[in-house]
Image (cartoon, rainbow, N blue to C red):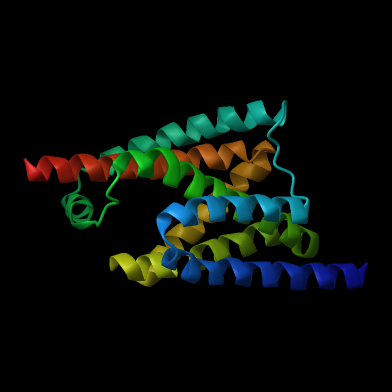
Length: 211
């Protein structure tokens, strides 16, 4: 039992390190190839770790209900934040993808939401939970999730420490949603709501500024 626990902990830390390392490598791959690659690798991790997804009833319905409720609140918060001048300036200066439709319909849902939720909240949480327990596993994946956004923060000129803390906190909440509902659909919906509403807000603000 002790050997299994120690081995699981080594596996968990190793997987966390790989995911953080990938966050520095992935952006160097052109988006057209990166999206299916990240989505496919995340799915492979789920299979290799035998991580439960809870995407069948009844946990699916619980996850959808919780995800829709929290996601609606998160979208409202994002929309409200656009009234803050500093937020509007940040969105105006943000470098957005050339194709808005591809960004909204493919890159965010598949390349970001599915890839990150499957990798962090499913695969890493499953492995870490075997070695550190539910709470420890959720914490490890949250820390790894926060660190995986260091490269993104540097690329867009955002302060690194606040970005890591904010995304790490979001990762912890996403993990709690998955654990509480028993379904990955809950954090996926909330993650999708936050990213899509933020993207839509940035597109709207930039187009308005051009007029």
